[in-house]
Image (tube, rainbow, N blue to C red; front, side):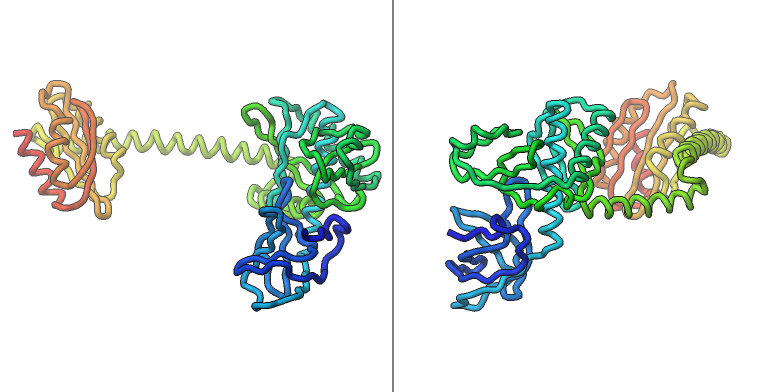
Length: 390
């Protein structure tokens, strides 16, 4: 079995080891400081003899180090080096999770169902469907108080019989090789992850947001250096907004609301003006046409605009059929609408002409539409439509 140096001393960054097993894509070592994925904590990265370690997993009882490229055949000894920034970040986040989970358990009896350590933030799922802002603030304050007190974080291997002496925050299913992570007088938990030697090294905990799940609440948070990274990113966004909105920080919300309200007002004005233009355009088409069928070809007009114009035309003239076609890049779109006194079916009309352009569409007796390929010209498409009207 591989000796687990990360349990003996999580601060070990370099080590030497013998190769116990060498395969094409992984090696098993006599001892290792590389933590394998498990318990919600991602694996360590680093190098073995200068070759990047891409993944570390426990498979069939072996700690397998998956390399970016194979070691030379018959390599006997390797020099390992872990990515310390990544390892210490994981130690901060994992210990922070213990502290935050214990705070929610102590204050409100909210148990932690699961834990996930992501690249930029971590999450815990709490066994509650509702949680208030005040509860979040209170738990966060207690967690940071525990950090400020710089309490020791101890680890201890116990037997199943010895386990009864400890008031675990969460029951464990392990029967042997039970490892406890202990923050005296605050948290006792069975855990296989890596942690700093004292709570002060967690630095700080900040809750970011919560999300309601079906039967629990997911809480996102950051610890240690991630708090600084997160604060820097938010500060950059804040300064950009201050400059863009030309407003001080305390008035940014009001400035944003004013901007949104003005935008909605402008959008409404634009919509109203477009409606008026459509009606003017409809009257102009009717004034220039003496027949009962109006046909027009446009360039790059949306199907929605064609529908609005056709509807406006037949609303002005109950005896009129309106056929509108738009050429959009390599496609043709067609809309057919009829006035109240016209007996022909527009749905049937569109169904007859769409095969000429390999098109699809639909509608009803009064208005129908469709689109397809420009396999024929827009003029020919209108002629085909007129044929079914006559």
